[in-house]
Image 1 (cartoon, rainbow, N blue to C red):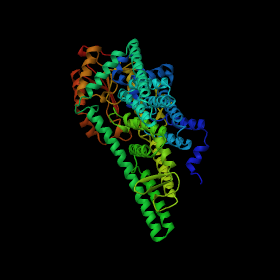
Image 2: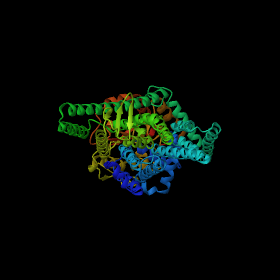
Image 3: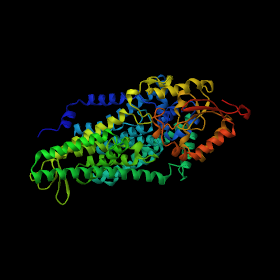
Image 4: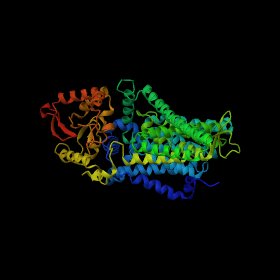
Length: 609
């Protein structure tokens, strides 16, 4: 039987060329878009972690990513933000390569490459910079690689290394401490392969040994370089923020609710799509059987396809978040089928590990899988693609059966080979169109057509980075006047979602966090008081006048329409901020359409830096 186009194409491509194509694909996007929020917080963390670590204490919950990013900036300071984005591409490419090596002996090579390509292009709206989420994904993949090979080859030192990477991942992103439960794969593999209990205990001890030895070594390194107390204080701060206050996004109940709700939506989307496909198939089969009119089904097929493309083009059908829900739901449904009907214990174990990462990695993020989930698909999704694309026909006879061969009798056919091939082909087209549409319009806090992004910002840290004319002009105005009021090494509070300012001006965050918006009001008040006591300094304040994240991502050309709701959501923190600037008689010394600079009255008698 003739191979479908997708399989034929990916079988022909050389593996090294495939990796190069994915690397170049990621690379072409790093020159455009300027986000003042997330990327700013990573950049200032890397810039200050060795020079003034106490000023970025909040970010120490991501300590290992700070060490990696700080080392990268130390080695390549001249590359600035572009270099940090290049590092992110290198980490993602390394993740792809290790995933391929892990799965290549167990999946069809063409479908493995297809799955990796789909995950790569689905990361369409997230920052391409090196940061804790893509670095976490890489560490999870290394954990999976050494854990699986250690179990299969019965090599304890590889299982030890798996525990080592779990420990590093915990320091890379604090919620990744849950990753230690990936050790359950030892029991699952042992159950499937009837490994004796003594061997399983030894494997578990090796895994735990790698975790605890590495944890002790990391704490030792922290002590040596003066980071231990800052790290502990960061943990205390996060725990205080998660005690259930109304403003907190880090309480256990909230995190459980947001993550369970995300996967509920994921299943809802994939079930809805499946029912839609079922309706189309039943309708086409009915027309063909009842009226014997072949062209009617062809017409219906193309009408549906054109309707889908129109809806996607208008941005009505699938947003980038909904696309993530579809991919996650698809993966989970495929995983259930694999666990029940697949006879290959190695594939089952790999899918177990992949699903563990998919379900556990996003926990700890205030937004759930919306921000982290896309980095959790590297293992499970290619396995799901391999399973589905190897299926030719789905039949029903008291149970659902996924057949790799076409059955002789058509009486039991639920969806035949031709129809299922068409579903997969159209699914790929819709997926590719949607992903490329979202990456072209760069929706992550710099939402604009990339054709318009060819204006630079006059700052050495942003060499090679381009954005829209309006954004470049507005930021250039701020950066041209700010040296009158701040110089490198000064304390500056950038309020409230513009931490990039600290990075661009080499200034120190005042409240041990360059992003005040992440603090609830009580924490913000405490940190203001603590910083005032410790520094004996009143900072210059750079304040944004427009919303710069979420619905405000198109500033200054398209301002957010929900500013009233936004102000109400942040009113408690803003009240603390206003109390602070009123108490110390701050006044505005410069302003443009989007930013203003405030300085305190010198009569307050506190050193101003």
